Image 1: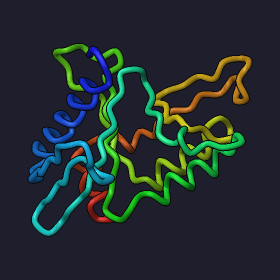
Image 2: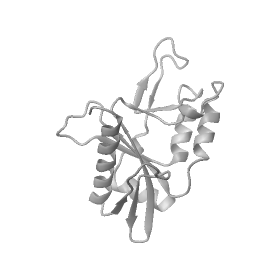
Image 3: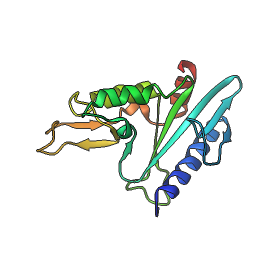
Image 4: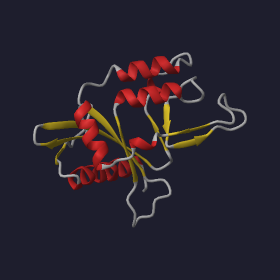
Length: 166
């Protein structure tokens, strides 16, 4: 993929397709001034607002614009305050994915992502959600690895679980 627009466009298309494969009706928003979500997924009386984030480098930068004075937890709290009920994130990862394969996809609530970001780097916190990150020897979290929880993997069961809880 050439640039961030291509990544975002492809990610949104894959997210919509996966929800449709699970039997959900999809309404996709287009335009410059979208609210906090990119698409709406509806299954009978159940509804999810889905914010799609695509990546081609193994990570999603989510809270760095809120970081001040190295207060990672405060940045996460400010980011969390911007999200509402019924919103879930669909994280789409294209790194090391062949064109003939589906990207890796994850579903998480803002609260789950916020908790993960606060625990990252052995509790210091981070502004970047890494799919899998081994901290280098000079890093605060040297010798540790942060990875997205397995249960965030996009499955029909995960969609149904989130729809029942958000």
